[in-house]
Length: 69
Image (tube, rainbow, N blue to C red):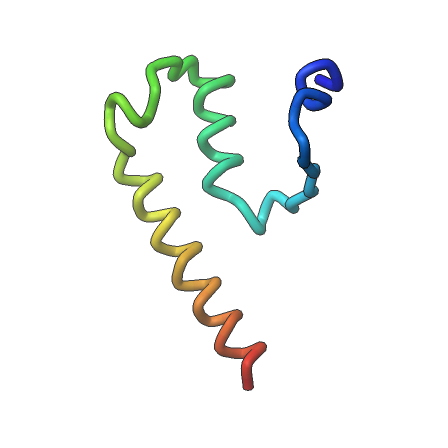
């Protein structure tokens, strides 16, 4: 990985907890454990994933409004 990253002028690695980015975890899980090798972009997102993104969006809006208060 370092051989590839050294070619970039600027990069960083950020740890995200599973609950903070659950949709990405679920995509990786479905690809590796359920052999869903076809791209979600090519096939379109399954309904459970669309719902997950919507739930994450709502949660982030609620969190943001709480932090602003």
